[in-house]
Amino acid sequence: MEIAIAIIAAIVGIGAGAGGVYAYNKKNENGGKNKADDLIRKAKHEASDIVLDAKKQATATAEKSKEEEAERRKEWKRTENRLAEREATLDSKLDQIEKKSERLVKQEKEIEELKGEIRDIRTKQHEKLEKIAGLSKQDAKDKLMKMTENDIKQDLVNLVAKEQKEIKHDIDEAAQAILVTAMERMSSEVTADRTITALKLPDDEMKGRIIGKEGRNIQALQRATGVDIMVDDTPGMVVLSSFDSIRRQVARYALERLMKDGRINPSSIEEAVAKGEKEIEKEVVRAGEDAAREVGVVGIPREILHLLGELKFRTSYGQNVLLHSVEAAHMAGMIAEEIGANKQVAKTATLLHDMGKAVTHKIEGKHAEIGAELAKKYGMPDEVVHAIAAHHDDIEPTTPEALIVKIVDAVSAARPGARNVSAENFAERMKDLENIATSFPGIDKAYAISAGREIRVIVEPKQIDDLTALKLARDIANKIEATMSYPGVIKVNVIRETRAVEYAK
Image (cartoon, rainbow, N blue to C red; front, side, top):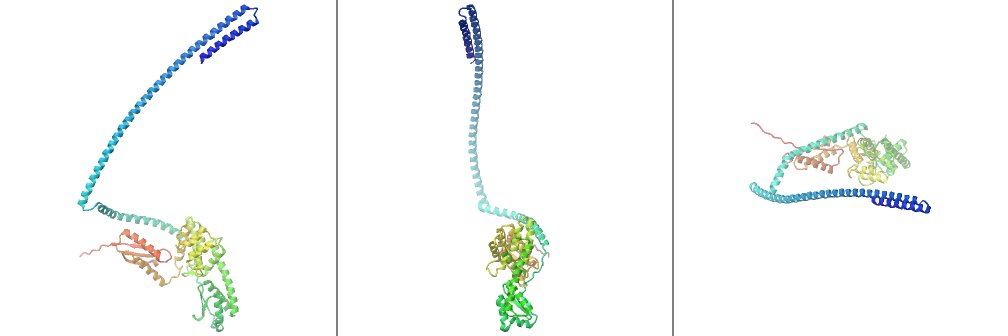
């Protein structure tokens, strides 16, 4: 490239000199010939110098190119040598790998042969052992498993008992703390008022007025109230009899008003009954509203408040249902706050959990199912409906609030003095508990103690071992849950004791 530039420069120089000469000659054709010759000579000399410089540069450039070419050839040679060395190294490594692969294949074959020999030896040993022991492989395996099971059985029993004790202790401690806190903060009457079904007569003359001529007054009163009225069964008393407690209250109110007024006739009876119905209706609504206000529950439909108020005139085992619902709702709110559940849902569901009892004499079915249907009908939330339906385990409780309703219902009903249970019923329940326990094999004796809160079962130690005793306790508890109705919790205590007795003579 540089040589070409030098040659071009020389040609340009010569051209320029010739052009200058030509121009000068044109200008001075007839004069200054000598000067033109001098200029020509000078131009030729300069052109010669330029050409000489160009040749020198071309020569230097050519030598430099040759040197670079030689250096590149050397570098290519070195690269070829390195590649050749690497190729030789790779070939060597491949040879080594092939040799190792051959050795591995050979070793695998040897290992397989050794495995086969070991299997043969083990088979022969098993045959010899079976001949010596007189047992087949499966029989020996079963015997060994049985021996192992017997060895670890006691350890397993101890471990299970220990874990159960620790878990039960932790759970019981936490649950007791929460329940005791709720019960200590809840103050209510131990005994509940019964619905009044009998009225005292001031004198025999009033008795005659109530009966009326040929019994027309008492018949009119019975037709108007739907209540059976008996004045001759108990001296000095009027007995009101009806399955509907609201009607009994209307009849009581009307009869009290009539006896106070003194004028008793069919027209005054109708007037008194009408006023009684209005008063009882107001009292029912007021009772429902007061209960909701006391618990702190808002947004309950008026229809449900009316059903709730009717519970004021209903009892369950001698316990006033409305007071029971209010008491349980207070405890439900406390427990829900302690464990982080929805306090409003728990209190609402607990307050309404027994409202089905207000219509059980009108609608067939369990009061939990009826209450849940009514709550759903009047637009209560699904969580409340579920908790009402599940508080007697008719369905499985799946929310913390449903479990709270179930627990506080049992606590309120099971506390001392909450319910009136006759001695006959109590004795029958105790006997049923003992019969359920003794229905299982291996039972020596069974005693119902702690007012039916615990069943203590003594087993035959030769028939029942420690592990079976654990299962027996669970089976007895399951049968009690399935076959009996009871408030609270019944503890099943299975006792296994081995005694060794000897006499020194």
